[in-house]
Amino acid sequence: MVGKFAVAFTLLLPVAFSGQTPAGTIPAGTPLAISIDRHYAMRAGEPIEGHLLYPIYADNDLLLAKGTTVAGSVIELHPDRKRRVRAALGGDFTPFHMPEVRFTQIVLVDGSAIRFASTAASDGTPIYRAVAPPPAKGGLLRREFDAGLSAARSDIATFTAPGKGDRLLQFVYDRLPYHPERIDAGTAWTVETAAAVNVPAEPAAQLPAPAPARKHHIWDEPEAAAAPAGASDAWIVQANLAESLSSENSHADEPIEAIVAEPIYAADHTLAVPQGATLVGTVKRAKPSRSFGRTGVLSFNFSQLTLPNAETRSVQTRLTGADSAQEIALNSEGQAKSKPQDKISIPLILALMASRPLDQDCGHRGGCSGGGAGKDANGGSASLSLIGTVVAIAGGSPYAAAGIGYWGAARAFYYRWIAHGQKIVFPKNTRIVVETTPRRSSPMRPSTQP
Image 1 (spheres, rainbow, N blue to C red):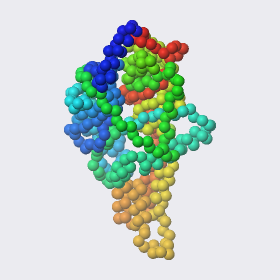
Image 2 (spheres, helix red, strand yellow):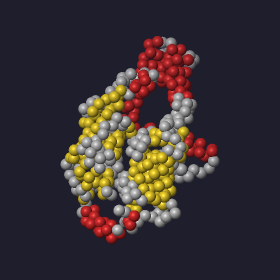
Image 3 (cartoon, rainbow, N blue to C red):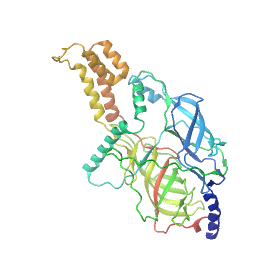
Image 4 (cartoon, rainbow, N blue to C red):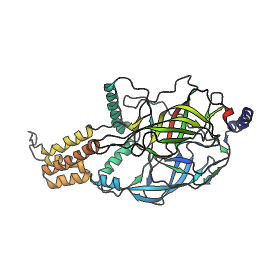
């Protein structure tokens, strides 16, 4: 068996070094994670174009590289009722929708297109990659300090991260009682191939130029620590969850599976973990979200690795990364919780702005005339944006303006302190990253392959 593997590996060397990916077939049911790079109009029939977030393998061969272009269209719009209600309470009466999309073409490096059938998806959202930090140091005070620092970093990133100009424009739009909708750049969907897709051999995609080094600021999130040198018996496995998991519906000891999406090769270029192998484990803890802002908690791990030839190995695992539609945080043990948020600043600022119309002190510069309308407008706009500003100015009553302002402060306080906290949800085909180590055994060798 070792000899057969060596021959196959030797035969693949000319293909790899000739700058081509081999021809192959992507099986039906293969998940494709696709993200769009620009904004699109929110309308049925709108053609859209995105790129693969992850490479696609079949039989351990790379068939489609990360970044491959995938084209499709919006096939239908569905009303987003939850967002509509929440926006209306803040003075925004835009009839928000959720687009349902279907992708139908894969564009190869040479410009040719492959038509394929995929499932439709309507759960598009930006994808955040949560990364487990190193083990926490210190006691309760240190952990609380780190949580507050993380929340402060998120607030600062709003004004410093790339795309701040577009965020400012959207902030202005959100102040209007009605504004055009769009599908935001960065929105991602995961669809499955509805039938097998034949991919011809093609030139290997050129690797993008490395990004220039960026100065690290104190408000930036710390980068993930590199794997320790010499950990040759540990594999960093990319896998897709076989079923959805959530803090609301999952329960402790529930069996789970994840399908290895990319093959892992050992230092001597032998195949260690084949693509298509199955990680088998259980949910360790699932705690639903509750009122008063208490978020859900979810943790799981894997204890077995089943190879395509049905051989099973015992493994020790640690969840080190996971995609999520929400901004979640992983602790050093791989437990998923919501990312710490600033619950104090926004309600406090809105409350202070709401109280301004009630400040009727007359200074010696200009007396009381001319300043009341501005104060009333500020208090109202804190709650109902442009509508609050107009009502506050037209009404002329500081008490009405303050009431509108306090309404905004109360909404902010409710959503941060009283309403249910964030749920932790990992849909089917969520990409996870697992550090896997064989338990009481040496690394697998090619002889274990069929």
